[in-house]
Length: 176
Image (cartoon, rainbow, N blue to C red; front, side):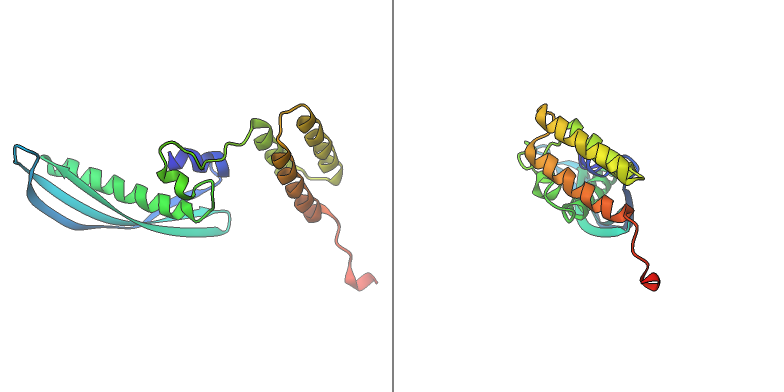
């Protein structure tokens, strides 16, 4: 789930995940279940780094594995530690991740419309002020048609203005 949500928000290949630390902190034999079968208890800690553009965030997590098979106990603990660390790193990117990653019902996940995602992509890809004007007109049309909420339209217009500032020619202070 965290990977799918990061792909949805940042775009596939719009972010990177790196495990920068992984350490087994406990590995011992133990009894398992009601039958007290011989087995293994294993614990790992992990630190994961998430990079989106130039923004780098890290999170730490722990994982525990219990199994009659030592290898499966290690595998379970490793996965849990890395996933926990990744969720904690992604939480720092704001509400779309936040506690929603720990909420199985996804009550706090904001779902954006397809029109919103297409608008974001078009704004980011625009290379001229004329193209941005066309996109702005299309956003108004999509809002009127009910394809965008007012909030989505307003957020996209803010992005459009920021992109417009990037594309606008800057005055040359030496020619004044």
